Image (cartoon, rainbow, N blue to C red; front, side):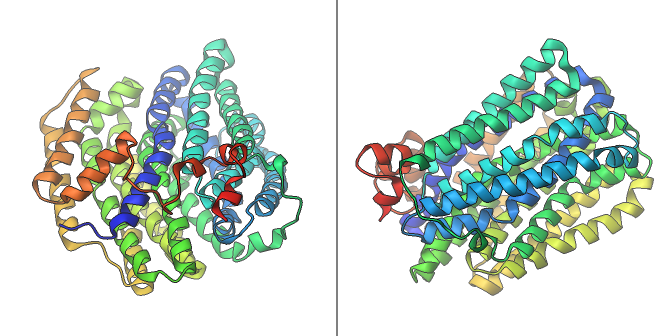
Length: 512
């Protein structure tokens, strides 16, 4: 099958690989941190940590959503990106600080509502991360807008490494739950410092950019992102609020943390996609944009067999990572893993709609998820508990993904290739059956899952999903050889804003 999108699709793949090189550390880092904390804090302590993380993540992404996508669009279309970056930094610190103060003030009430007394102090400390995360997210958006994909990947890698090291260090030192929170806050600070240092705003850019321009369509973007983030955590909140124990919340939170990692790393793909579609659309190259979007949908479907690998090995994964006291995590892990890939597909759809300047369409996709999932979980959770919460979340995620594909078709006239759809479904079923029929214990489990993942890739090749040109481009991109292409066809040296300044101009000057 011939690759849709040609060089532009290969360019997106190359750009996404550079971001993924950093974001992919979310997978091993997140797994190691979750496994370590689950065993050190036990289900009760991990339950408090999971609840606190769910609340703080919802606040952080709510603040970032107000201007992050608009920042990418403004930077991508500006001749001089530095005034936009300065405005984004100031705005992120202001809004993040206000949100942190509100969260700290509300922490006693949240602790009483969720019947978790230790939650209050945990949230007060955790609130320090909100302005740090918000400012770092603004810096990431700027890096994507100026096509600093390599820098974006390195900054992300620094955060995941710092998070793993600091959390383990503080908890090993005896700080317990507060140490885990402090490590997360410290990692956000590391990311912020590195991100804005690499942008090097002090080297120029004295003009001011109106912050109000970054808040265009903010209500729609905020409501959409807040709804999506609330949807991904609503099951945990309702499980605890409807009578679940803190230990059940810990078991469910552990499954949720691991299942969400592929979707988190998938941002390395959707964020460059939004910037690329925005630039193509602004330059009137609509045909290239549609071809690129079709290739992106196709690539997302090809990741689906990973859900089959995790779901089929869920029981072994839960016991291997968390220990025997987290046996209840197995069923939620299997269901939430499948739902996580549906959310990744939905993320591609919302990125495409954002690039097409359709914020209300994005809102129409995401806001109903909360209402639908919340209503169903109120009925299902008291009857099925952890399995019911995960089942509703997974089902609603796939309904949202289907609605997203319909909305993308109405806006862009693009659908995933039917051949890719059936191949992805077939390979996913095969990998799931292989994982179920090939149980592995202990340290053999990672080897089994790796073998199944490689087998899924080979099945796609056997089924002629990828053309020879695509396979060659993938090899060149992985090896870093010329010919893989970049998102804009620029010289690779322009990838680093800081390096661009030292070589005769900033990245913005290089682009101009």
